Length: 210
Length: 122
Length: 104
Image (cartoon, rainbow over all chains, first blue to last red; front, side):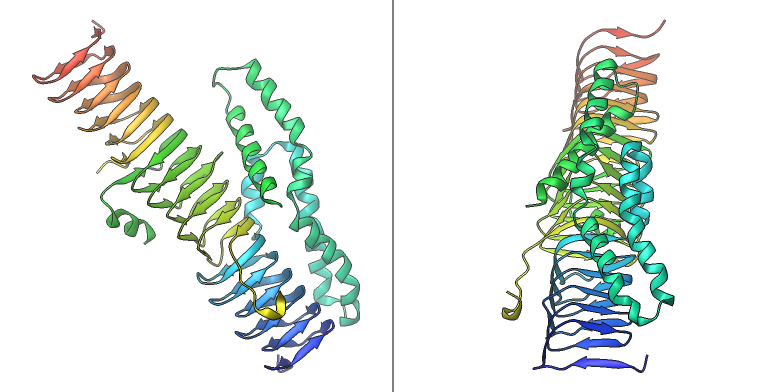
């Protein structure tokens, strides 16, 4: 914990930052940050690349994806253009973010029972890599960290763009829904209302991906 | 807390209690507090509060401000504040002038808003 | 206070089902099913099949009404549709057009 790296105001780092220490950015970083410690992007700090760390606090600006195995906290004044992924994500009103955000694990478990079973495997796949990557990270020596970068990125990208894979099973769900609706036009079974509901939600998500 | 605020601010308040289920579209003026279940779109001019037991799915939620303590599956659009409380589970895209997510909330979706980045990052 | 209130500015198109007491001040189009009492207040517009334990109507209802217990059409009520309940009152000043079935 005593090990703190500070990129001061007026300093610029071009290149990746890796290690185990804690990092505070008050200047400008143009390169990926991959740390086992905590990262704080201070008010005037700017980072133009991806950040992966134990926990991340942003009060400055970030253009890139932020991944954490603990928490991401965007405080008032933060500006983030990129995706966020962490078990705990806090966004203080006044922070601005534009991107795909995934927090917690309860969303998946709460929603899954309502989804058609066809989609469950897709979700499990998407969830598995980050967990697998997180577990070894704690014990593996720091030399291993760069190697973890690739799966982590892959995981991030699968998470960053989940709508496409989820859209794939949609035709099946759609036809199922249509046929079950056609077979039973009366509102006897709850599934028909749910299926169009999912279709709509998915359509909305997909349409947002420009 | 958010609920009592929603109830007291405007004259027209709609409350859908925890044993109430709506399948269809909810539109209109004023504030709405949802502790029950709504399957469909909600579009109101005032403050939409999805209470702890509230569930909204199968449509979008549009309001001036939206506070979520319950579960939403669908898009949330507010002209003002979107506030996702600590017990909330939200799956869908968010847009609003201001967005806040409390610790403990589960959220998966895109956040749409205008981010003006400093010169170094453009 | 009833636990479900559909406020004056609000319009619901679709189906409302509740185990609570229900107060309608706004508009409901479609179907309205309550297990307890339903009060359709003055100024409310209901264009729906309405079912509940006890219904009190001060506003406007277009559609059939069915109550397990009773239906009271209060002064100012305007109801077009059939009413089915074991007890029905139609107050002076209530407008009503439809059949009454008291399950005799």
